[in-house]
Length: 129
Image (cartoon, rainbow, N blue to C red; front, side):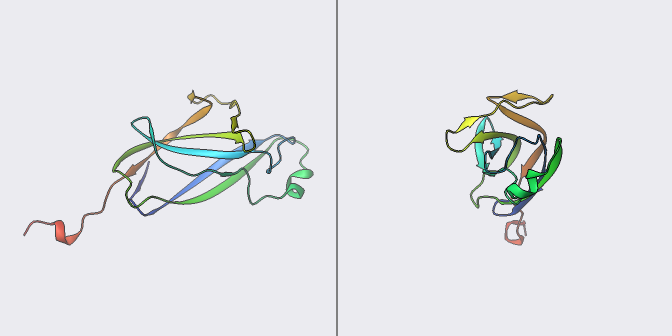
Protein backbone atom coordinates (compact mmCIF):
# COMPACT_ATOMS: atom_id res chain seq x y z
CA UNK A 1 0.00 0.00 0.00
CA UNK A 2 1.27 3.44 -0.98
CA UNK A 3 0.04 6.62 0.72
CA UNK A 4 -0.04 9.80 -1.36
CA UNK A 5 -1.70 13.20 -1.42
CA UNK A 6 -3.67 14.81 -4.26
CA UNK A 7 -1.21 16.66 -6.50
CA UNK A 8 1.65 14.50 -5.21
CA UNK A 9 3.86 12.03 -7.03
CA UNK A 10 3.28 8.29 -6.95
CA UNK A 11 6.26 6.09 -7.75
CA UNK A 12 5.38 2.70 -9.16
CA UNK A 13 7.39 -0.17 -10.66
CA UNK A 14 6.13 -2.77 -13.11
CA UNK A 15 7.78 -6.04 -14.11
CA UNK A 16 7.08 -7.41 -17.58
CA UNK A 17 7.97 -10.87 -18.84
CA UNK A 18 8.33 -10.43 -22.56
CA UNK A 19 8.81 -13.12 -25.17
CA UNK A 20 11.21 -12.34 -28.05
CA UNK A 21 8.27 -11.59 -30.37
CA UNK A 22 7.22 -8.52 -28.33
CA UNK A 23 8.52 -5.20 -29.55
CA UNK A 24 8.13 -1.98 -27.59
CA UNK A 25 6.39 -0.10 -30.40
CA UNK A 26 3.72 -2.77 -30.74
CA UNK A 27 1.85 -2.30 -27.45
CA UNK A 28 0.79 0.31 -24.94
CA UNK A 29 0.11 -0.10 -21.24
CA UNK A 30 -3.01 1.08 -19.48
CA UNK A 31 -2.88 1.58 -15.74
CA UNK A 32 -6.18 2.46 -14.10
CA UNK A 33 -6.42 3.47 -10.46
CA UNK A 34 -9.94 2.45 -9.44
CA UNK A 35 -12.11 3.82 -6.65
CA UNK A 36 -15.66 2.40 -6.33
CA UNK A 37 -15.34 0.75 -9.77
CA UNK A 38 -14.58 4.11 -11.44
CA UNK A 39 -11.27 5.28 -12.84
CA UNK A 40 -9.94 7.96 -10.48
CA UNK A 41 -6.77 8.56 -12.50
CA UNK A 42 -4.67 6.67 -15.00
CA UNK A 43 -1.21 6.37 -16.54
CA UNK A 44 -1.23 5.07 -20.10
CA UNK A 45 2.16 4.76 -21.80
CA UNK A 46 4.11 2.81 -24.42
CA UNK A 47 5.32 -0.60 -23.26
CA UNK A 48 9.05 -0.54 -22.54
CA UNK A 49 9.13 3.05 -23.76
CA UNK A 50 12.81 3.54 -22.93
CA UNK A 51 13.93 0.35 -24.65
CA UNK A 52 14.76 0.47 -28.33
CA UNK A 53 14.02 -2.17 -30.91
CA UNK A 54 17.75 -2.86 -30.94
CA UNK A 55 17.65 -3.57 -27.17
CA UNK A 56 15.06 -6.25 -27.83
CA UNK A 57 16.32 -7.59 -31.17
CA UNK A 58 18.94 -9.95 -29.65
CA UNK A 59 16.62 -11.39 -27.04
CA UNK A 60 16.74 -15.20 -27.53
CA UNK A 61 14.20 -16.10 -24.78
CA UNK A 62 11.69 -14.56 -22.37
CA UNK A 63 13.20 -11.71 -20.43
CA UNK A 64 11.93 -9.67 -17.49
CA UNK A 65 12.01 -5.91 -17.94
CA UNK A 66 11.41 -3.29 -15.26
CA UNK A 67 9.49 -0.07 -15.86
CA UNK A 68 9.62 2.69 -13.25
CA UNK A 69 7.00 5.44 -13.47
CA UNK A 70 6.39 8.65 -11.54
CA UNK A 71 2.74 9.61 -11.78
CA UNK A 72 1.50 13.09 -10.83
CA UNK A 73 -1.88 12.75 -9.14
CA UNK A 74 -4.64 15.22 -10.01
CA UNK A 75 -4.96 18.09 -7.51
CA UNK A 76 -8.71 17.45 -7.16
CA UNK A 77 -8.40 13.67 -6.67
CA UNK A 78 -10.87 12.32 -4.11
CA UNK A 79 -9.54 10.76 -0.93
CA UNK A 80 -9.89 7.02 -0.61
CA UNK A 81 -8.40 3.66 -1.45
CA UNK A 82 -7.60 2.93 -5.09
CA UNK A 83 -7.02 -0.50 -6.56
CA UNK A 84 -4.67 -0.82 -9.54
CA UNK A 85 -5.71 -2.47 -12.82
CA UNK A 86 -3.16 -2.88 -15.56
CA UNK A 87 -3.05 -4.38 -19.03
CA UNK A 88 -1.77 -4.13 -22.57
CA UNK A 89 -3.48 -2.91 -25.71
CA UNK A 90 -2.69 -2.24 -29.35
CA UNK A 91 -2.65 1.56 -29.77
CA UNK A 92 -3.85 1.50 -33.38
CA UNK A 93 -7.02 -0.50 -32.61
CA UNK A 94 -7.35 -0.08 -28.81
CA UNK A 95 -7.77 -3.86 -28.61
CA UNK A 96 -6.82 -5.22 -25.20
CA UNK A 97 -4.61 -8.30 -25.04
CA UNK A 98 -5.58 -11.27 -22.93
CA UNK A 99 -3.23 -11.35 -19.93
CA UNK A 100 -1.46 -14.53 -18.87
CA UNK A 101 -1.53 -14.39 -15.08
CA UNK A 102 -2.78 -16.11 -11.96
CA UNK A 103 -4.03 -12.75 -10.59
CA UNK A 104 -7.63 -11.55 -10.84
CA UNK A 105 -8.59 -10.44 -14.36
CA UNK A 106 -11.58 -8.29 -15.26
CA UNK A 107 -12.21 -6.91 -18.77
CA UNK A 108 -8.69 -8.04 -19.77
CA UNK A 109 -7.19 -5.95 -16.97
CA UNK A 110 -5.14 -7.50 -14.16
CA UNK A 111 -5.93 -6.33 -10.63
CA UNK A 112 -2.59 -5.96 -8.86
CA UNK A 113 -2.22 -7.06 -5.22
CA UNK A 114 -1.54 -3.48 -4.09
CA UNK A 115 -3.54 -0.37 -3.32
CA UNK A 116 -2.96 3.36 -3.18
CA UNK A 117 -4.36 5.41 -0.30
CA UNK A 118 -5.06 9.04 -1.19
CA UNK A 119 -5.39 11.38 1.78
CA UNK A 120 -5.10 15.14 2.03
CA UNK A 121 -2.50 16.41 4.45
CA UNK A 122 -3.76 18.35 7.42
CA UNK A 123 -2.61 21.94 7.65
CA UNK A 124 -2.04 23.99 10.79
CA UNK A 125 -5.04 26.13 9.81
CA UNK A 126 -7.31 23.11 10.22
CA UNK A 127 -6.17 22.33 13.76
CA UNK A 128 -8.49 23.33 16.61
CA UNK A 129 -7.31 26.20 18.84
